[in-house]
Length: 436
Image (cartoon, helix red, strand yellow):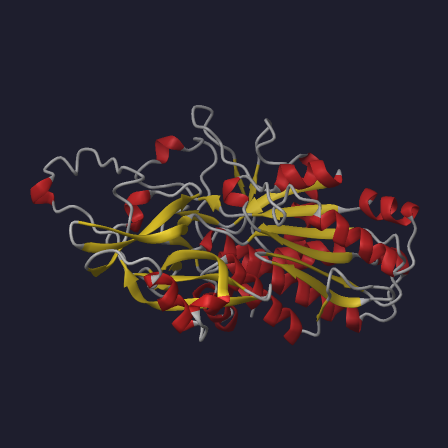
């Protein structure tokens, strides 16, 4: 049985999606799986000398993890899987308690490219990170229907099916109670859920999420539907590939030193808003962590340069499946479909980092893993999205290929992918980071 058809892999993915309602929760869930596989969390402020085996660093909504095989030279090349933990959503403003016309509401700011209509009339919970008076942080999650962004009844807008244009400030604020707005009310509720006193909380990074559970869809249950498939499918696949690689290297005690690779997972935050943050792909976090991992093994600057020169990177992010109702918006000769395997994404204007070298390396890994491969390129008349691929390629100067699981409704409050593709992606990534 392969991962693509393994029910336990699919159920673990669904559990990961359900638990990862914020980037901070996604990092926590990934860390739990890594620790179960024998990885050790390292502090960025402590010395790493002599560290080998599986290690990871967690910072807010970002996680960098790697595995150094026993006997691997300091110049061993990296095999990097890049992904991101964030998804478009509604995030709580600093002064959240507002109201109108006898309703209590919560002030939210729109994060990323949100199709706002998909957030209407959904039961919403709240989750994220609380920063306390002593400087520590804790996670909080209220996975029950607290909020709702109500749509205007059709009787009051007969043109709604002709053109729906929401005012991003006035018409996206959720309701959660009746009465006059009361400053501190939301914070008191959040503090109660986190078993804290409101006075202990000095800062927060909170966001709303659809509480509907992930699940299967289709005549043969051939699809998965969930929030945050973009891009937690790739994060989960990266964790799966990294732990599989660690297990393989730990058992291959007689391997030739020149065949070693150091598999890496880099799960960044803030991709949906450009990656320009201390935990985004534009930051030096990956470069610093990998550099320190070389130095911790006694490596020199020359070893660091050699490790990068031989490195390869896969930027794993969700891709577009051809939409049956809008097929004219896709390239006429490239129509990826769910359950057809991961997609290599190409854009010659460097919105994706894929070139022939990177494509060949990933295609070969898919062949060895027995995984089908598809291609995606945009219709010339449509603007193209982007990913962390070009950013990582430019920061590190390494060959990078952009890939992803094809799906529908990207950035929606609820997205769709094929049920086999997450397993296909994990298999391909595991092969890529160990033998490419």
